[in-house]
Image (cartoon, rainbow, N blue to C red; front, side, top):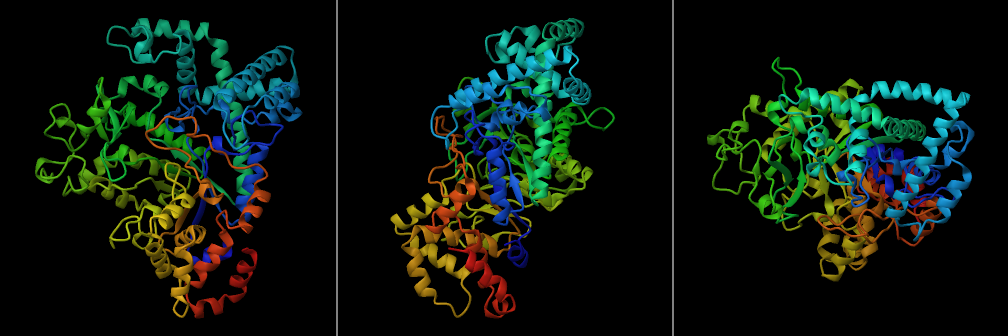
Amino acid sequence: MRDGLRLLGVRRLVLGIHDAAFPGAPHEDVGRGSPCSDGARELLGLVHTLGFDGVQLGPQGITSLANPSPYDGTFFSRSPLSLSLAPLTGADWGRLLSPGTLDALAAGRPGPPDRVAYAYAHAATARAVEEICATFRRRRAAGDPAAARLAAELERFRAEHAAWLVPDALYAALERAHGGAHSSRWPRRDATLLAPAPGEASAAAARRAALLAAHGEEIEDHALVQLLLALQHGELRARAAALGLALFADLQVGMSAADAWAARSFLLPGWRMGAPPSRTNPEGQAWNYAVLDPRRYRGPDGGDGAALRFFRARARKAFAEFDGVRIDHPHGLVCPWVYRAGPDPDRAVLDGARLFESPDVPELAALAIARAEQIDESVPLHADGRVTALDEAQVERYSALVDVVIDAARERGRGAEDVACEVLSTMPLPLGRVLARHGLGRLRVTQKADLARADDGYRGENARPEDWILLGNHDTETIWTVAEHWVARGAGRARAEHLAARLLAPGEDRERWVARAAADPRALAQASFAELLVGPARNVLVYFTDLLGAHEPYNRPGTVAPSNWSLRAPREAAATYADRRAAGLVLDVAGAVARALRSRGADFVAAHRALVERLERIAP
């Protein structure tokens, strides 16, 4: 299959899946997936067999018990929920967790294995972490050699990563001390601990010292868990590399409460980031995310200011641990939609503005990059055509944060081709110019293609080679549900004709193919997948729900429900995939590659007949 993909010019075939969605074997499953688990190992083997060469993980930060969305997690600290507990019962890891504890936690997991039991996983992991940390301290005190080695590694890890380990651990300790309240409701001395007002620095330093002493054990426990997660991630990366799989991180745009507390001194006061009205979200979305203050991007000497140092540390950590990154909502880095913080965020987000192109908004005028004569006042504030022109110096200013990501990539021998940008329905001129500055591609979600518009950005034929093309992502309906809707609404014929134009070579019986596909949602789904492979986009992303035949989206944006963020890939992934593929219930990768190769015409097929026929024999 990889031979076929190379012939098609496909540079990357990447599976998208969040940590929580990985399957777990019965002996290790405490209610949530981990990419480092035995269940994940089997799924990665299947992904390799199917010809994929990359895996896109979701954000891995710590999430609260009340909110499982990974896009609200911490930037730096990984979630303990992603720990693979089974290895920690073995000798290689110093038997930090007793097998009996894991057996009891796995036996108590409620619900079906293809669903996250989030509350239970939260409690079970806390119980396991408590034992792990206590065992480590006890064995270290007793002079155990394995514990001593781990202690030395922990000391090194804490020294290297103190800049984020300590603030994250302090935030967690203070949050517990204040009954789980948000930092905005803490006493002033704690809310401003890392951002004291002038004249309060000495008192804040004394308070920090007192907290570090009082919560020393909790801070060490936090670091130990982060070390274990980092070590397991290193093993995952080595395992993936042996399978020829690159790992991609997800740089979410939203800042967690913990990160916003730590970054308080260089945030834009009084403003929040959200999504403006758009084709997919006409009412916008009030995300309530903090905004880095552009005035703190640079220091007095022109070097990195506090805001850029913070963001650069995050980008560097991502490229130190992954082979590539996905930038979530890059608009938030280039031309963020901001609104005033207040009691009615849904109204405020509709009355928001672009941070760098609002010279007529008094509080934002000093931050404007676009000049008044470059702004079309006749269109809405959020419209793509609002800014009509920019010079190169302005583009450089808009590109400040994206430049940091590209710098971090290059420091690790990577480039723009290892960065995917989640640009969907909107592409304001500043964002388009920044992407062009670095040769970055956007996402083309073909299930959303408007067949009545030849220039629609979601149509596959309108993609560029650097783009990433996909059927859907974690926020969309799956292709299986969408295809059923096409047929039910009478749109199957139009979709089949569009796919035939992309997939059938001259001489093939187009009418027969269209008639069959138009009435069969499964055929439309399979053909829609094959269309991703015919170009011109060279990077193909497939979300696990589409690959494995799910009929439910992973997340419904703007809603809070137990079903969100809870789907998991099935156990025994290879056998399950084989059974479902025979019935046409999952995406047939071999068949799609063969179909895409046949679209090149009879002469091409004749030159590669053995490969095409072999692929067709693999297909059901």
